[in-house]
Image 1 (cartoon, rainbow over the protein chains, first blue to last red):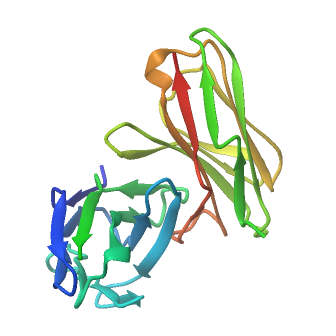
Image 2 (cartoon, rainbow over the protein chains, first blue to last red; image 1 turned 45 degrees about the vertical axis):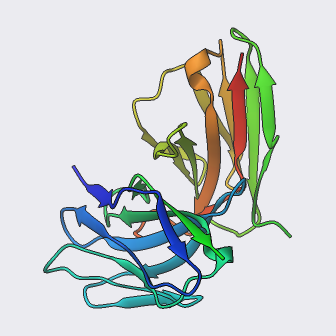
Length: 113
Length: 113
């Protein structure tokens, strides 16, 4: 079945450091890909998305490119802030899965001043 | 206005009790979901409804019974609560059952003692 694998956390960075969180997926067909963020004590917020190969999603300085050839959707940010500390989830949504999101295990990011 | 709202935010109850969690969305979406987040923050779908009809039931014990009185509401009733039911339950909605993003509520933290 479809699955998503993220890099293990926690990831600890200093403010203004470069961030990469790796995400790879296994899916039949052509899923849409998403990054969600969960701040402490809150629900999930959509961070960015990409619906087809080579699409780049971007929001709040974060970017991710849908790479069909490597089945990857890595999240990047050039300069992280303390306020970016949260848990980040990569997810996919297959075209014929009834809207079901399949999530990776989440990566906790902690940014120190 | 909160797009997807669920109540209560916290629920502490004893084993064997029956409890309900309510969810409402004001986005005009046709599809609603319940997801469960375990203690390791792993997210997994439980149920999905489209226009009040159940379309996904992911091998959830039948102590869990969703009910959708209309397409803006999806409630979750849990009978005979067990310690292992302790988790955060998220309601979500999406435009339809295609590969689009879902919007999540703030979550209900259920603790069974």
